[in-house]
Length: 93
Image 1 (tube, helix red, strand yellow):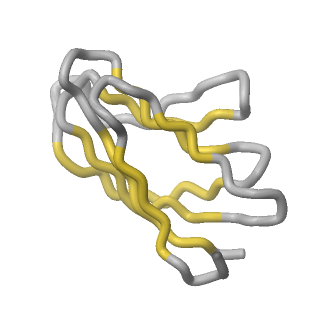
Image 2 (cartoon, one colour):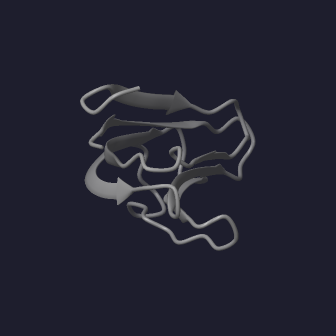
């Protein structure tokens, strides 16, 4: 992939996604979507998680600007039955 390419990912039901770009690659996450409040979004450094989520009762989309690289990736966590999430962004480097 090259700078300007779109990145997107969609989770399997009740499964977590951790997207960490390749070394030297940087991405900008611009939006994420969830089917239920049990889906959380955040950053992951390979060990630790942080959370970037709308209120616990909201579903739907969340617009954002989150920069990620090979050290800190983006996480979509699904903790409830029949929940799923996705995200979209762009490679910037």
